[in-house]
Length: 453
Image (cartoon, rainbow, N blue to C red; front, side):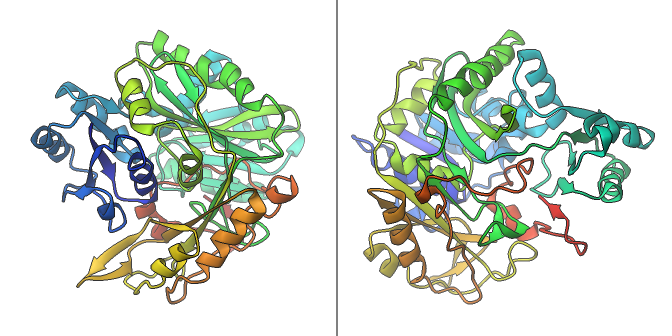
């Protein structure tokens, strides 16, 4: 099988790495790829935003399957263009990708499908902001949650106890011509669950938990993700099936009823609140950094699974999973997430992998043959072990061997998970960040200390 993967980040490197372990091994191509992906696939200089170029490349290569990684080309219609050209594509249409591209539309779909989520109000008029906050925050309940509708490169959400801050953020979004979603705050830990969909059938992958704060102890500014782990020993028994029955299948069925088949990954971002499971968000693609740990545990072949979904031939049978635990630690550039420094040499990858970990490239580039940083989240160091404690030890020992001036990484990824406890997760409403290329532009926390995603 010949597969073309669209994208250049850690998610796409993890996808290519898992595809390279299929038997037989598929012929892999990537556009544009990155230095890590280039060790597994033939990379082609076609930008993520070049939809015409992607179609031309798929034709030149005569590929059997195209996997579209990032959200931006999906929302722009990359999957539609490729399907119209006759290719099997794993990735939703632009219409279906609105689940990620429009928070207000996603709320409409969830309401119609009976999917549990945070109460919300969509506002287009500044005069409606005060009343809207009162509806979702009765009796002055805090924190307040305000979200810019649409893709916002991880900068569209403010979670704050200050009403004035919430109103100011919402007003600034409206002043810029946007729409605001005011939302009930969700307590409880987050869980990420990826579901493979073919427009009708749904197959869940293994749950994971990621860490969005920059510093140990869930402190510091919000980021696109500083690490992840799987499995989750603390999740309630039957959680995956509950999410399938109350969230994933109803959502896919509602979209099908509207003649908008969802083909690809339905990323269910969940909060396990005191009132039960609630959807924080939907994404229309694999999430990063969770993909690195979930696909590392997958035993079933990935290529045939994605091809079956692309062809509408998915079989709802359980997948095979390793019992090993996997922990991913992100190496971030100096200044991330406020303004990441790039162009610094990277060393120690071979030494890290000699310690039993593997290293995923998220924001790297080659400059005169030298590997340098090219984004906010630069590398993901992935450790595997018989349990989370062993996987943590492998990942952290390897991460210490990476040389990148000014870089930082968390040392507490999965430490609570190894104790059978979830992350403290102080900001459940914060959503998954955009692709790695946006990381260097993330705003983190403002001068007033409020959380911005």
